[in-house]
Length: 116
Image (cartoon, rainbow, N blue to C red; front, side):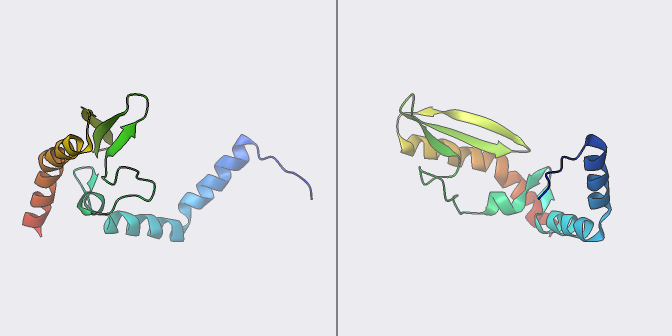
């Protein structure tokens, strides 16, 4: 089998064709519609209570910093991480995370509920 390397123009042509594909455009629009972006934040994600499979702390947004041997809490909001602090124990990190969810997520969720 012959190895082929695409040049820059060939890659751009493929991407142009792909972005004009009706199935691709429909899938992208369905994704946006089903993920309820509100004020730059996905309501589906912030309302979810599931933790990721690779989460070792058991709490979304909290991880153990192995160098410090302390828990770091952060929240992802409007495309940016907001650092909430470094904590000696998991319970204080959880409290900080819950307070941040109230501060950042709750107003958007309430606003969406009022509109619908």
